[in-house]
Image (cartoon, rainbow, N blue to C red):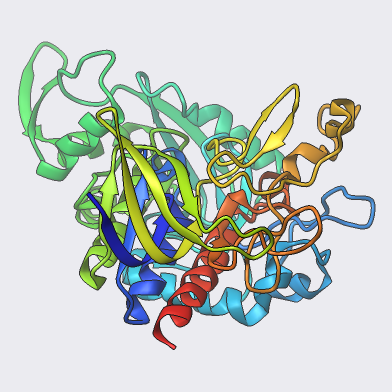
Length: 439
């Protein structure tokens, strides 16, 4: 069975979906192949462009107020230097169009300072509207509310960390039981569903029990802990699908602004963002083929600039070819297994693209545990058209582009630049592939 498209994108994260969306909007047929669930389910839902740029010693400084001012000063190997400032702006414009009023930050070039579940403050370019009332630059006093069974968010500890960081407001934390008869091991999605549906839950009082809608019951559980705070922060579980309505209900009951604090996995803000991107891709005509890995490719065998004819997907023991004119590689980095490593070296496992690295494994690490580790920047190097380069600096294939964390030359974790690079390079790679088809 031969399946043919204009462009095939391999990878279903932010970079892959942005690339596929860019292809579709240029009028080309595109298929997205992904093996596993998107890593967005484990991400905070924040979109960082550049929070802490590396200085001349390789260590990070910051946080940055305006990431766009720093992009031209980044090393030549950084993916942002390939797409340029305007490429980053165009990608954010596409993102803003997709998410609409569900995100904030598009009104300014400056990073916002968003508190996270550990009490740290993260500089980020775009953030969910549900987190807007919690910005660290806001001087209104805040009460953070945690739940006994949601152990990933220690509200009193997070509040203490915020105060220690020097925020311009007083912060306190309180830990309560989520109202209702929920299992001790209930997932945060169960709490979110209860708030979405405003389920009636049983509330135990002093010698009595009564039933209340979940949103009202939650507000009643919080009220005794309020001491005049003007805003209240909850872990990010205020609904999966009707979050704004949940937040507005709580605000009306509490008489205070309500915000979500971004969480680690499983991340409801990440899932909501994934849903928005998938919906935009489907509306644009992107075809999705998921659940099976890409294991191999077919090419014309020409060295240095040869062409890929198809990628092969393993399905029920069979190898199914997906043919296309152009291909985009967006499989992730070391964490997502888009870049693989062992004692012998570092490799890109699908197309065997060259990954620059030292042959001495001890050179991959810094002596300091929190130092500037070379492995954090492992990935493929590309030309100005985002085509992966071989050891001689020539394109591996003339019709393959790369985007997102599979690219080398930057440390997304230290810089806080992962989502921004994925958006910018995804859009550029997808658009470049589509133009090759449609020109």
